[in-house]
Image (cartoon, rainbow, N blue to C red; front, side, top):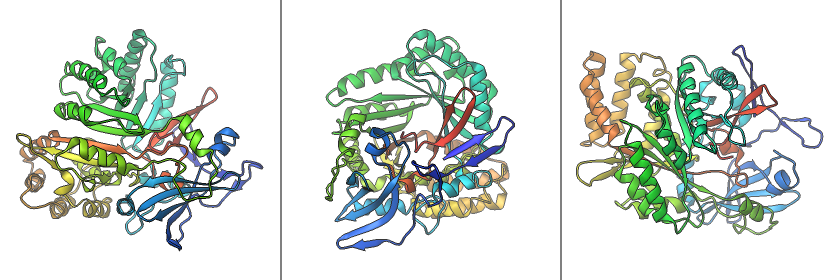
Length: 513
C-alpha cells in the first residue's frame, strides 16, 4: 500500500496490486472471505495471501504474494503457503486452536466479524475513516552509516506525517535512532529531538536507542528526556545462556534512568528460539515497575533461518516452515513470572481500543487505537499492597468491554465528552467489572467528574494507573509468515523515502519488517 502525501497538506491514498511480469493492475482482494471450509480432518479457518521467500528475495520478485490458508489440524493452527513454483510450506501459527479462535473474536471495530477489512478497503477510507489511520508512525532520522539527517529534511518529513492525520487526532512518533557510532552523534540526536519537540504539538515522542547509547543520552546536559512528551525506548537482545550479563547491563541502565524524575521507559526484549530463561530479567523489571511500565517480549527469526526453512518445498502437513506460535512464549512467561498466571490472563491487542475514550477523558488527546487482535497479547498486572498481584483480565470482562466501547465510539469522540455520554460510559464500564474490586471503586468515583469535583477521582485513577505494569507478547510476523488478512489492520506505519524528496507512509505490520 502506498499513500502519497503532498507538501500542501492533502493525503492521496493510492493502493494497488500488480502482476510482477506485466505490471497490470490486479483488482482481486488480498484477503478473500469465504466460509470456513472443512477438508477431511482439516478445518480451513480462512483464506489469505502470503509471501514465498525464495520468490520474493532469492529470485528478486519483491512483493509478489501467493495464495495461502490458515488451517486447523487437531489442536494446532498452521499458516500454509501454496506457491506454484516452490510448493507447499506449513508454518506453525498457534499451537492452541482454542486460543487462536478466541483471539480472532476480539477484532477491533468489526462486531460480529472476526476479521478486518483488507488493505484496499482501509486505504480507500483513509481520509474519511480515522480508524484506518495508524497509532504509531516510525521516523528514521539516521542514514545507514549512522549519520543524522538535517533539520530541514526532518521538518519536511514531519509535515508529511502530520498531513496524514486530521487536526483533532493525535499520534505517537517513534524516532529510530539507529546505530549511533559515537557520543557526539548522541549529542546531535539530542539537539534534533529538542527541535522535533518544539515543532510538533499533536504527538507523543518515543526515541528508540540501544541500551548503552541510552545511557549516554541520559548524561547529556539539557537532555531531551527532561521533556514531558519524550519517552525513552530501549531494545535489548537477550542471548540464551547470558541472562546474568543482561541483568547487570539492564541494572546499570535503570540506575541511570533514576536520575530523571517520573521517567517512563519502554523496554523491548528480543530473543531467538529456543527461548532463553526470562525469570531473572522479568524479576528485575518487576522490581522497577515505577520506571518500566511496558515490557514488550519480541521473538525473532534470523534471516539465515528464514531463508533456510522457507526455501524448502514440502507437500506434507508438518511445520517445516518453523514456528511463530505465541502460546509457547505466553506459557514461558506464566512459568517464569509465577503468581499463578495463565494463558487467559493475556488479552488480544485489539482491546486497546477501549483506551481511546479514557485517554481523551484524562486529557492525553484522541488516538486511533484500532489494532489487529493477533498483533500481540497484553497482560496488565495490578500490584497491590505487599506482594499481591492481580491480572486485570480477571476483574474485567474484556470482550464485553470492547463491544461496549465500540458501540459508544461516536458519542465519545468530541474533545469535550457530553455528560450523558460520560455517564453511559461509566455505567457500561461498571457492568464489565467484578463487584468489590478496585476498578469498581474507581469507576464509581468518576461520577464526580461532571460535577466539577474531579480531583479525587483523577487522583484515584492516577494511583491505579501507577500500580500497573504491562507485559506484552509481540506476535510478530516476519517475511516468511506474512498474513495479508491479519496485516490489514496495522497500528504502525513507517515513513519511507524514495529519491531525495519524495516520501510516503506504508503499513509496516507493527514494525515487523
